[in-house]
Every structure is written in structure tokens, then in C-alpha cells.
Image (tube, rainbow, N blue to C red; front, top):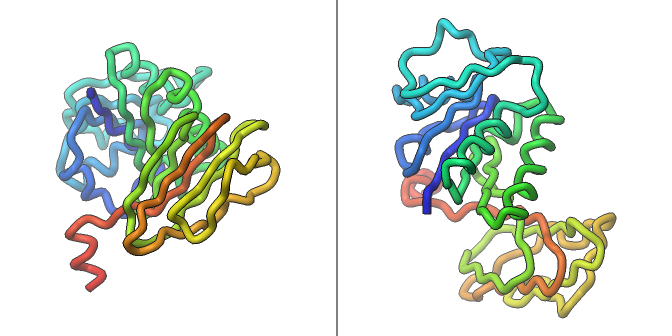
Length: 218
């Protein structure tokens, strides 16, 4: 599966993921600063340079310069560009927290754009501690030992069953105007099973810590 890592204008608090992630790297305007911090050049820079000083740009492998007068955000333009080239999985950093709120909402909307096209998209919070993604009809398993899992209905008629979590549901209809699914909890030693019978949900999940993060917590 061809994977792309897109970094937005809300620079992550920790950009070391650029050394760990695998795939095609895209800087969206001032998301380029995260690459500068890591001494790394993106495979592609997409920018209208409204938040990035062009004099800071060194040598990305490719650059697409956009007009600031356009219909698409820099991130959305980059996403469509990559879809045309066969990419199927997208990881979005620097797209939540610290950015203008309308851009953050626009980035969440892109998860629906991807799900409609049967592609995978994950948004990471600015501290890289949580991830947001959409689920459509199906059965999903999670093996986290702790942390929170929240589900928000994205359309009327959404029905969900939850098992192996602190709060369980059996074919419960979730109303998109009521946040019933907020802050459920994983249970140690239990496999969490989410069954989406109809509709789609926005999921907010705490990320599983990697070995480096576990060492810091110790």
C-alpha cells in the first residue's frame, strides 16, 4: 500500500516522527519547518507561501507553488495530487492543534473524502498522542491495554455495538447531535470490538506508545 505523510502548517510539538515514518513525505506550506527541525527534506513541498518564507526553503525534491487565491487548501491540493498517483494511506501531522480552527475542521472533513474513496486517513493531534480516523460499516478490533476511545456519529441511522470496553453497547443508534460515545475506556487484557452495523463514526483514540515514549514515561 502506497503511504504518504503530510505535514501541515501547525507544526507538531515533536517532529521526530519524520525519522521513523516510512512513505512519501509532503510538506504543506509552513509544515516545511518540521522538516527543517529534523534536517530532512520532503519529497514534495506544496505551498502558496502565505505562512512560509520562501527564503527558508532549501532543496525539497519537488515543489508545487500554488496561487493564494484558490478553492483548495494546501493540504487538500496535496491529497488530491497524491490520490491521482495511486496513494492509498495518508497520515496527517501538524493538521490539528495550533492551526486556525477552520483549517482544522477542513482537515477532519478530508477523512470523509478519503473514506468515500475507500482510502485510509489518520489525523494526529499536535502532541502526537491521539489519532482521529473514520470507520464505515464493519467489525473492528483494538488491543490497547489502556486509554480512551471516543466515537461520534457522522450521520443519522448509525448503529454500533461495543464490547470489551468499560461501557458496552448492543446495536445502539448514535445520534449525530448527541456525544454519547465520548471517552469510553480500554480495559487491560480485553480485546475491544467495535461493530458498526450502519453509518459511519469519527473515532478519537489514544495512540499506542512506542518504545521510546514508554522509556520517557518510566
